[in-house]
Image (cartoon, rainbow over all chains, first blue to last red; front, top):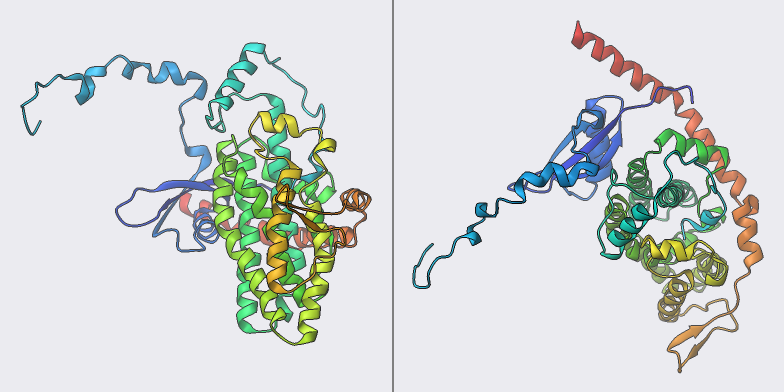
Length: 95
Length: 330
């Protein structure tokens, strides 16, 4: 195909105020404004959102799934970060 | 279903650079068996990836081609209300195609490659969209039967082992329900109308019944790749199970409409609790899949011309984006 390919954008939707944006899918677009328009037409035809983010897919930096275990390993042995690590005697309230 | 031609293509498509070890395959199957979702960048067997690319892209192509039989009635819908509804439905089909293309792209195939494969005829789409829509009642029959059959297949796909496909199907299923109900309502309105209107509904059912049953694909005994897809939890139910479920539900709806299902052997079996029905004309099914259905060439010609006629728009948008980027940089 001789045409230049439109870049890919990832689409994030805030479904209503108070909630964070959540990944919905992706769209191709020639520029940022078109990406927003396409995201609106593709992912919010039934009022699914009050706010949209689009970001060029090639700008996302992601962790490597093959390295998941090693990458997240530092958190594994620090169980003292969880409240359940601490024994509180019966009778102590509001803690 | 929308991916009936799945078994036809793509053996030995990709030369395997890294041979897959038994340990890798076992670990992968263990994840599947534990109902873990596989995500885009996770390790997966090449055959799993290829199967999904074929299935999801064929599904997407079906949505895109599926706009044509209904688009045929946009200018002739009987009222402004029906026209607005049909426009929304056709737009949904485009949306479904786009969700699915974007899910397939996560597997490493480009949008342009998929489109090129559709336009060259290399990729297949569902046989059902190669039948003509001859009257307004056909729009009712498509919503009721074709989208009804699609829902039957797509609900289990929401639990498919591949995360991006499963999530796309959740969105699709929410919207299909509107499609099916609007179709049934068209049929109901016709069936409650004049004798002539009811005859239109009957005629549409007569023509769309068998092609709808064919949507579920070959019988289980002839569906060679099903077992692997089941093991990978891409597929959750067999073709024949889903077809039977569809018949059981739909025959009762036809009874409600007062329409006759065009099958002399159709009978309820008290012992099994299911309807028995005639053998499908598989020759017709394979002919349509092979490209010899009533509308195959028309559908492809229209898709190709739409793509070619839109080329200048894509180029202009690109040129405009480049100009704006250059201005911003200056």
